[in-house]
Image 1 (cartoon, rainbow, N blue to C red):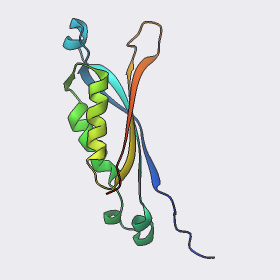
Image 2: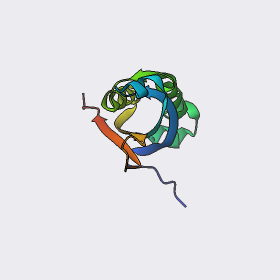
Image 3: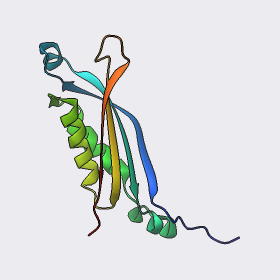
Image 4: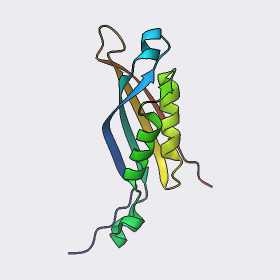
Length: 127
């Protein structure tokens, strides 16, 4: 049986990363931390990782996750849009990432809704 090599970028998903932050502009939001639920989806060329089968050849999504946690957990943000933009910047700072989408939910932000979310995405332009 011949070896199969991925011909498309690998898609990595970091699902439901639950953190707490001060987010919002109302007095109650400024004083109290709230849950934020972060989902990241990204693509990168995994050909070398598949071929070599070594961690050094793969995109380290654990590092990306730790960077997101350090940036968000316990910190202050006025707007969900800004927080989403900053997390997207963390992901795209890794040169191997071709494309990324970040969605951040703020549970119970509206009285009759489960959550409110903002989604932003970015794509690396070819050189």
